[in-house]
Image 1 (cartoon, rainbow, N blue to C red):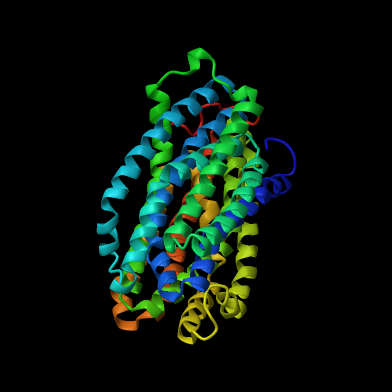
Image 2 (image 1 turned 180 degrees about the vertical axis):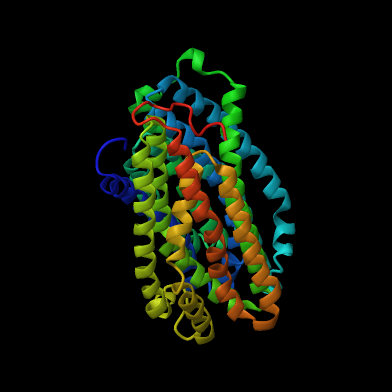
Length: 453
């Protein structure tokens, strides 16, 4: 990504990521659609009632994995392969430690978490068993995201997509088999998800070992390095916390919505699945732009960093405006994927949520790209602050306005959080790009730039 047309490179890199993200969301959408159609609205509500806490925990795992791979992209761009392999080795050790700790902690606290979310008694059992199994599968989530992150850091976004496509098809098959044949209920949906993701992670790891020989460790590279581990943690933990901090606001919003009853829980769940699906291009674009900026930071090409960031933001805004119109006018028909036609109140709730969302979807084009570029340039702490701003705004709406306006306030909580976070992260990102690029010579690689923050 250090030479050639920035837009073409970013979009070419982002397209497999987009397909992969769509497939990743298909995991969840398949669960929700099959559960909603075959097990009923209460089972759907049970699956959806814990979506925010899943985002909290899994977001932390995914965020740390992405953060651990940013120095890999920087070293790859600088062609410093020895240091790159040292970062990968220490990243493996840290990822394994996080997997063990997070899995044990969340499994032990699962029941208390569901109680904290004010989950209605009618759906408590389904929510508990689904969330517990998802937590047990955390190591599989980390395995896939870390291995896929390494491949993307060296410019290969195609391989993770291929394996994710295979596992998505497997997930749908296992969903139907576990629910309709084995009669495992919502537990079957959760088992299908973690087994499928585990397979995609194993396949990515196998390709890294067999295909990319320059990633193979020398004996002197297989050592715990305190400096490298510190750099990885300084990059990965803030990114993980940024995901988690954002999710805390979503948990408060989820709890406020759960208190409104199962109709709104089901409507919110269906709308959330569609919302997450529509967000996939934002995530793919932001990852593409951040990888582009990280590699060009390693190569010391400052003009390309500025160009990539600005063009990425403009593309994101354009997509946000287009998909926003789709959500406004077609939210209700899309909700029928999860909700039976005779459940009119649930359909109304989902359509209202998506319609309100559509008016401000363009803000995510600014927020996601600016945040990911800030992280890629080594300022993960600033990105984490933007997550805290987003969290605070979402909590404020949930605690202050939901008691007064009910589900209408839920429908505007996300947009308030996005706009508020944009007001912080956009000027912050522009300032960081100016400062970082201003310190780089025109053509001299800056191998260590961005790792010290």
